[in-house]
Length: 331
Ligand code: P6P
View 1 (cartoon, helix red, strand yellow):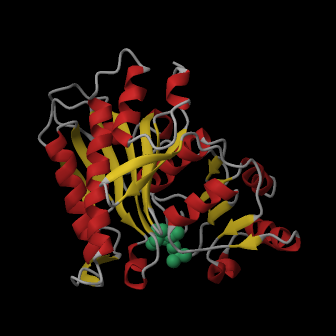
View 2: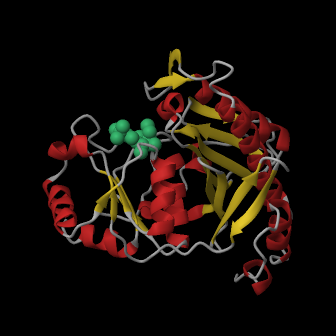
């Protein structure tokens, strides 16, 4: 169903709450649960933002000394972010279950009558925390497929990216931004610390169809598949710019706004890619497509991948449509 023009025509400077209410009004059958869920996520984002901003002062930087289910060294803020988001979603009452990069198993909220499930990376790029580089939260929302009132199951999370009802990220950067889609375009909100509010700053983000920025870890270049090396060599000959922050949300956001492509190909130590499908690649692919871009694993659109495991990984090539299509031509 197309949203009416009132949502798109909103002036910049509208609060997130008002924007969500306007969006909800555009959909007469909306009952408010998704709106509330988006508010719950924004609240958790505000809290994490506060923790991040004082990280250097209260010793929440650095490693915790434990590893997450991925075997990756957990940073203190990783764990804090995970706890905060889980608590906000539990208390909000709109989510019956959560999966998180930080937990191996499904997290049940005991809200078995809630309609939605959430897949999240509570704090992606967290190794950058100690050096004050931008980091981000990524979230993906599905309507459950199991009966209301029962405990959620794997099936609720393995529906495939095209079944997402909403997806977004929070970028804790030079400013803190919330960017999300509910399938009717992509909107960007900037956090005003003095007021404790997210304000609409980009009503409709349309990503450039082409670009000249590529983002990849050049240190892995020699281990990339031959066609990817060929694509990068061609890009360099064309005078493209390499920009790689090592924080997916920051690299993705820059490319979304300026036009570019982010690449995480398969490499010997990550033969199916490093990034996770359900809570990193699928939500960003939803946003990319809604903004006019594209996302693939090198063979299929990310959103067409049929998931089989909660923490499964995938190669990821995401960004400007013409750049992704040029890469696919090398396959
Ligand atoms: P590498 C951070 O760990 C992350 O998941 C993304 O945010 C980032 O783009 C990528 O991994 C960096 O991985 O192997 O280049 O250090």
